[in-house]
Image 1 (cartoon, rainbow, N blue to C red):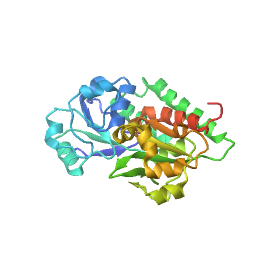
Image 2 (cartoon, rainbow, N blue to C red):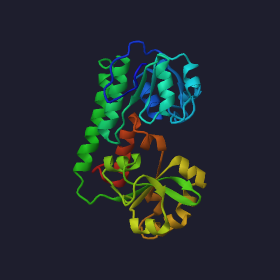
Image 3 (cartoon, one colour):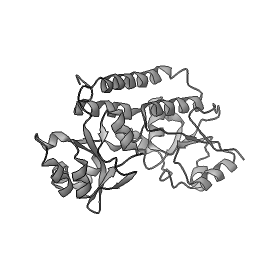
Image 4 (spheres, rainbow, N blue to C red):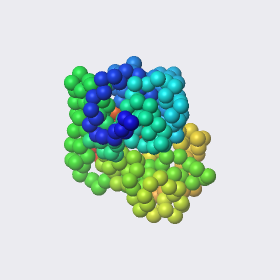
Length: 280
């Protein structure tokens, strides 16, 4: 059996010519490195860049099928850490196809490590070193800015979407919490762990200075006006002394929460909009 690998720095696999890419951040990384020609399929979360959607789909990253993966005749299956289910990956590995799950940490360093891991697997670390340096430069700018902030960190509630009438918010130990920390903000929903519905009472107690929500969440709600009209959001917005539309920040969900190459830029943009990076 070929063992599964989950590692921050993977050994080079010289036969990695044709790979399904389960996980939107891994697809983005392959494009970022200029290695999209190795992709033979993507999963349903791989929506960026737009041309990635033209590839065949292997379904959802956590609900793959061995038959679907093996039918692509891959030389490697390279996916995110939550790729699965485990028994499917074992079946693929048993068929002699290397399976590499790339470890994830919701930090700037974690993003750089993911990119380095993919480059190492593909044997192109030296060639893409300038691209890695670009990410490190963005990280450095973000760190300098947020560490130099002279005001208290803004309290921010990050919402994924609305479900059954309730906003779904990012608690502790989520990609949303990691993004807020990178952007120099305090997670207003840190009283709970994971992604959970947020009641009116909880939102009132959270007292966020800003609310961030994904574009998909806004579109599903019918627009920014409908989000601001939601009772839980309206309750919070009533305490804001300036234009509520300036404190409702809408951004691409995968850019913010995918922890691929775009997430560093998203954190820097958020920091600028919230004033946690001076001069931006």
